[in-house]
Length: 114
Length: 112
Image (cartoon, rainbow over all chains, first blue to last red; front, side):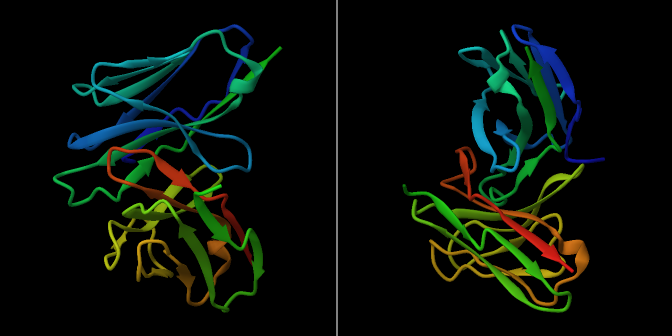
């Protein structure tokens, strides 16, 4: 089983739609969670960190469910510019002994069309 | 602007040749990482370094070596390239486990 798994999609949605992505992780000791965005042929960039209490940044909402070991990303009122690959990222941080291991899901492709 | 820089941007390499991919950051980050990205497989960690002088193996370390002589530089070496090492390579750095990782622009390597 992969350490971090995502539905690769692709998700094709119209402008204005709400879309949600889920990601599961296998290591219950994982401490840090992120969503990154990657545009075609570009480097990944941080979209938002994911906190235990859930967090929101404009149209984007991230949630963490430790009991079920999954994180989610909700995008409301989708824009054409939201078209990208969304990467779920998990970092194991057990007392700093392995904090170098950012582990990525394979990414979920989102296309927003007019 | 400051950040993380990779070189070269792209390279075609004959099988059996060696090559070093360069990565430099000027943010004084402790942690640095090398990933390869392949279609359908996502980003896979090759090697990482938590601090200068230390390195560790990631998910796919075979055929690659790294060194971390100082904080800023984290080169990745392919001793004898094989076609399966054709990929896009990303270097990244972060200040710590719970902080944002910054990526270089990537190196597109083709081994023929």
